[in-house]
Every structure is written in C-alpha cells, then in structure tokens.
Amino acid sequence: MEPRVSDPGLFVGTIVRLADCLDAAGAPALLVGGLAVARHGYGRQTLDVDVLISDAHIAAVECRLRAAGFLNIERMENAVLFSAPSGGWRIDVLLTDSATFDTMRRRALPAALGGRMFAVPCLEDLLAMKIFSLRHGGARREHKDLPDIIQLIVANRSDLEKTVRPLCSRYADDAVYEKIRVGVEQCRTI
Amino acid sequence: MSDHLNFPALPSAAGTPPRVDIETYARAQDTLVEMMTPEQIAAQRARFPPPPRFTLRPPRPTGQQLTTNN
Image (tube, rainbow over all chains, first blue to last red; front, side, top):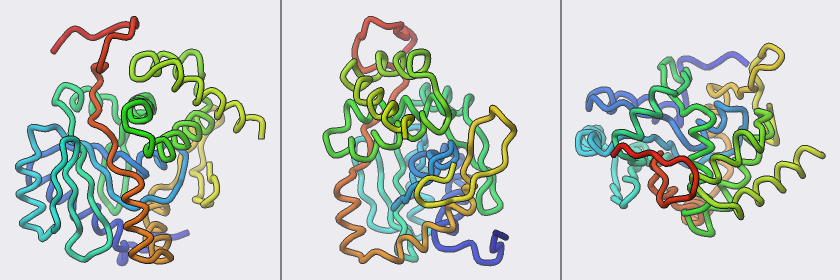
C-alpha cells in the first residue's frame, strides 16, 4: 500500500505535531505503547499516542504543547495527559528519571513515521516496562500488558529462560513469570 | 507478523525479528477509532489507565543483580 504522504491522517498528524513540540522543547523522547509494540512485531489497536520522556523536560514540553493548543491537561504522578486540539487523539506523556531515560535511549531502535524519525525502546526494555506494569500497575493493566508481553515474546521468538525470567525476577516476581510462561506456551502450540 | 489486524509485515531476512509497518499501522488507527463511539473510547481509556512509573532500577530487592548507582 502506498503511503498517502499528502494526507497523513489525524493520528500521524498528532504524532508529527507532538514531535515538533518535543523538538522545540529540546526534549528527546521514546515512542512507547501501541506504536512501540507494533515496531516490535505485534499490531493492535491503540487509543493514545504514548511517549516517554525524562522528568527534567516535562515543564518545557507542557509549555510547548499548551502553546500548540493541546487541551485538557491532566497531571498524574506517572504521566501527563493532553488532548489534541483537533480532537480525537490523546497524548500520554509518561515520565521517568533521567538515568533510566538516557539508558533506554542509548539502546533504542529507530522508527520512521510521517516523514520523521523517532526512537522506540529496544525489545528487552519494552518487555521490562510491560512486565513492571503487569506487576505494579493494578489488575486493570493486566488485560493490556499480558497480551502485549505474550505476543511480543512469541513474535520475536524470545527465550523464556534466558530473557524473560531474568526480567521478571528484576521487575516483578515468580507469579508474573508463570502467567507469561503459560500464555506463551499456549500461543506457541496454536 | 500480522496478527488479527492484518497489518503488513515488513520483509526481513531469515532469523531477524519481525516488524509491523508502523506507517501503515499508524494510518489505520484513524479508521479503527472511527468505528467507535465517543462513549466507547472513553470507557476503554478508563479501563486502561497509564502504566505505573517505570525505572530501570528495581523497586525492591529481589535477590537478583541490583544497580547501585543512583
């Protein structure tokens, strides 16, 4: 399918406008959420544009997004949410400490979108985020994070013992590993 | 890897990880959302709040290798 360069659509348009604001704020960012999961081989619906930035840049990013007309700003401990001025797509700016962000950025992979270059976490870091969320994000997150983790592992043929168990030991626990292992083995037998 | 939404997989050499064409994936999101009512979108967002704040430093000792630099 040929990309419609002249008509990027509302979703891609929102991402490009976000990228302009991030550039103006001098804030490097990583695309996470559905876009990052897709970059690593599992396509599913998403309702938000999720980016990860360092705490150090949130004030400048919020200032730029506000100036660009982004509305309904909702501040949370772990994220700041913005609605696009044209309606529809919400931007979730997730926050982390600068040491974590810098390390993840060094290991990130490129992703081209809307004529711009972005970065997404490497597979292991994306799995770490999802495994951490599965353990610490409450019951509701399980229905989003567990399928993502299972599909990413299956799609990338990740080794459960060598890759997934150490991540679970570090960011979750044995119960989380067992849920993932069972799901992966069920998927691999289909 | 196409999965249930049938996003086209990019060609890749044998043994390399699969990828979804995220340009096509991203453009398809508008169409998918158009099939939902505002109420359905709001309900789905409410079901899935943003993930907890992530750090590469583990939140508690686990007996595994721990980072010591703060």
